[in-house]
Each structure stands twice: as C-alpha cells, then as structure tokens.
Length: 293
Image (cartoon, rainbow, N blue to C red; front, top):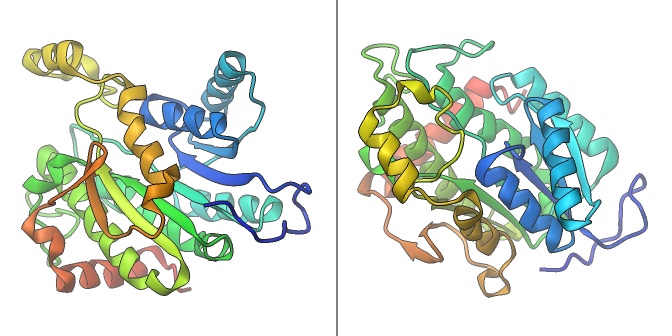
C-alpha cells in the first residue's frame, strides 16, 4: 500500500506514509499510534488534550526511538474543532494513507455537545463522520488509502430509529452507546460503497473488552464489570493488533465493507446490512454536521 503520489508543497521530500489516529493519547489509540510509527508511518495523534497527547508522544518516542509523530488538537464534540483540525492537517500534508477513527466514549447521563447533539452519538458517530468527510480529498489523493473505524460487538444491541436517532425521548446510556456503535458499522459500509471507485477502503472492527481508561467514571462501574476488566480484559496493544492489521496488512489491499472480530471478518448485526437505513443515516449526518455547507 505504498503511496506513489508526489508530496505536497508543504511536505518534506519523503515518501513516508501519513496516518491519523483519533484519541491517540491512551488505550487502543495510543497502541495503534505506536504500531503505525514502528511501521514508519508519520502518525498524527489527534487528541482532545494536547498536553496528554504530548505526554503520550514522548512515551512512544522514548520507548521506540521513533520521532515520526505529531500531536494536533481535536475535540470530536465540537464541529468547529474538527474543521480546525482538518484545516491544520491540510496546511501540512496533501495526502493521507490511513485514518483510524478510534476515539469514543460512554456517559452515565444524557449530555449534549456544543453543537447541541447527544454526546455519545455526537462523538462516536457524528464527529468521526464529519472528520472523515473533511479528509476524503487527501485520502483519495493517496489511494489506495484506508479508513479503519473502531466499532464494538455492542452494535448488535443497537436499535436505530431515524425518527429519534439521538434518543431525545427515553435516553438510556446502554442504548445510546449501542446505537452509536451500530452507526459506526452503518457508516463504514456506506462509506465503502460511496468510495468504491476512489481506491479508499473502509472497514471496522470489534476490539473486545479492553483494559483502558475508556470507562473514565471507573468508580461507577458495577463490581462484576470491574472483575471482567481486570481478569478478562485485553491489553490495549492486543486490541490494537486488529487496527494495525486493517490499516497495514498487504493481504487486505482492496478489501472493503467488512466488519472484523480479531483478524477475521465476521457477521455484523442484521440491521447493519440495511442499505436504506445506512443511506438515511448518511443523509441525516450530512445535514446535522453541515458537511456539504
């Protein structure tokens, strides 16, 4: 998947590949950034906190000796921040080989983003939807290029209604998260279909139960889940292997519109294959994010 395009005017005269990882300061994102750096990608670590991002960058550099990482601020709960990130990226690079949509959250109470969206779907889906669309030009320029999205087996509990996609009526934390992960899979499949002729592939995967700070309100997690996290949860580096496989493996050249569990493609939920629902979600997301404005 080596890019044969010429570097842009503001890029160093190098043929190193460029990757973006959202939420790269911790957990799966940090492990993915480290793995891509080790594979000689220049990794843009897209982090809500630049300070935490820089701390993670230094830790990776100290551990690997690689200096090929850059931290840029990105708050997926803010369309303004997403647009500023895309603009900053475009000022430095004209191409993008891999985009890893990793960042995500779950909360205990219904909250909204600064743009008025339900927070969980706002970050997990709408933020990544806008980001990906704003980066389609450099992805297509670098084709073959790849978009990898971290989904979850929890998407199978999703029950998405386009009459109330943000759960304004009857919000439930578990349902909000499951719906956002179903949105991730629907988005991946629809992106794959829309980008098919461009050389940009789109796949997603289930990372499984991971020991990370995804559960930020750890003291509010039920004791049983704490036990499973400690005993059965994967290390982030283990979960990141699938992200790296989807991002880098030569055997996946041209493979698109797939959901992976581990290194193998798996069946996603029946709802995730509903093309009419995927198209409706895409068009709704375009309106909500203003991506066409």
